[in-house]
Image 1 (cartoon, rainbow, N blue to C red):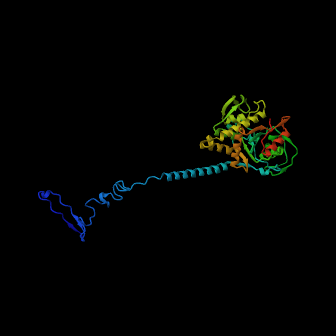
Image 2: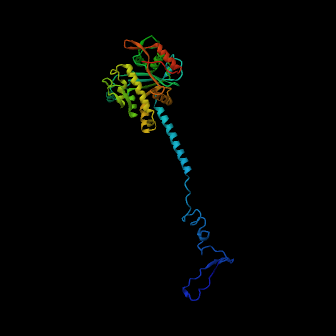
Image 3: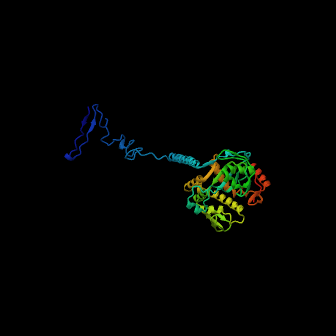
Length: 397
């Protein structure tokens, strides 16, 4: 049983003012005092070590006087987690963008309906068509863009873009080119129409039975197999140019054309959608008429591709998404066209005016009335070089 021991009385002379000796506590076994067990209460040793500086105590290892300290932050771990988070967001965004963009492609052209096709050569051939479609345009848009109000749609420009190992080649086929309409399968009726040897302007093929007959006619008259089809109308063209912030061009001469609405001064300048459409449609203000117009179209499309395929557009979501939205909504492509095929076409267009790229008109041998006649010998040589993916040496008009 614990007992309380009293210390000796205060020394003489201190009277009742002396400080009494504090009691010490001893258990029933006699432990206590100098030799016995002491709880440490008398000396303030409540943390288990002298001075109260034991583990967990004030000033003790890991102590700050108020409790355990936080461990130092693990920056390597934080950086790793941040990197994983950023990578995940980028992957999700990229995949989401791909499926969003892919869903916007208008795959309306069925090339499987094209009959009696040439053998496929090396490289890839795109048929790029600018149509005068006014679909989706308001009366105000038609007035602003000077498109008129004609119903239906016709080809305003036709180009073949060949991509391969010897640089891209862009060939304009004037819409007044004299061609033969071959036998073909109707795109809607499915009926086969035999060829009669009819000689017409190239744009008549599109007007008669749409993209499938145009592809069939181009393949029949050139011997070159078309792998992909891309078409854009008036409104879509202007929207893409505006979405990318305009396209810088060096205008070769003063142009004033009341029919297309072009009113441009010679020199380098940035064209908006309305001005760009007027420029590529201008025909009567140019000396060479349709041939000079096709050259201007080639220059502009190459400049547009250069503008789109830049870090300022690709890495800027505020430009990239509007441009993709305007472009993909406006394009009509074949059923087999994918985003990577489309991207490959744009990169090739960008290289047409630089590096190993070549741009030309189809070689001509004169005219018959208002129809332009191709130089058959040169066309055959050109097609052989393209089919074999050789460097093009043929010169066009």
